[in-house]
Length: 159
Image (cartoon, rainbow, N blue to C red; front, side, top):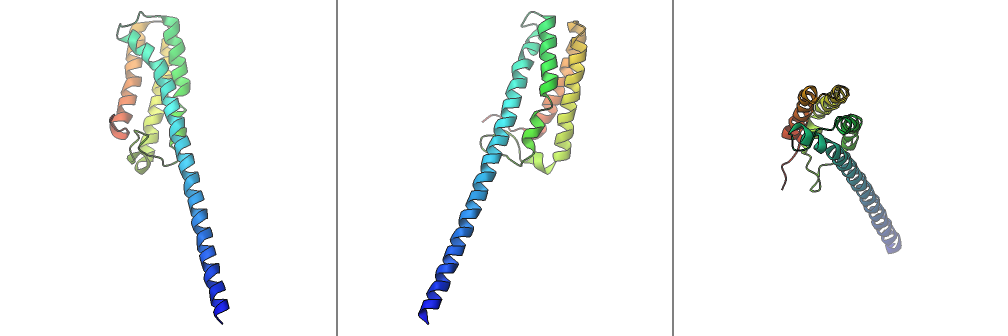
């Protein structure tokens, strides 16, 4: 009579252990995907910044204006502007990210701000083709404004 009880207990322990193992695998997978999501968007933003900074230097007069370089960078930023949103599909705030959790609480607003950034970037690319810095400056400022709007609402300050 003790034998069936021991077997039932062992089966319960084995089943419980299996459930715990499966749960930890699932959590590990979520964590992996979240890390990949964070890495993706960080990479996209780094590429955008790489091309945005030289334009900022030209707009501020810190770098000599080069119409070809400005236009090339504006076009690249316009293309890249569509990428970061893909890194926010998973809810993935973390210590390794400056993204506020409020992104996922207000995702429609966040997505709208990201679309504003893309639209302003595309307009800048078109204006830049004319090669006139005086006309590119307001378009550049409009892109910067969309960045600031999103950063203010959804980005943590540097630690």
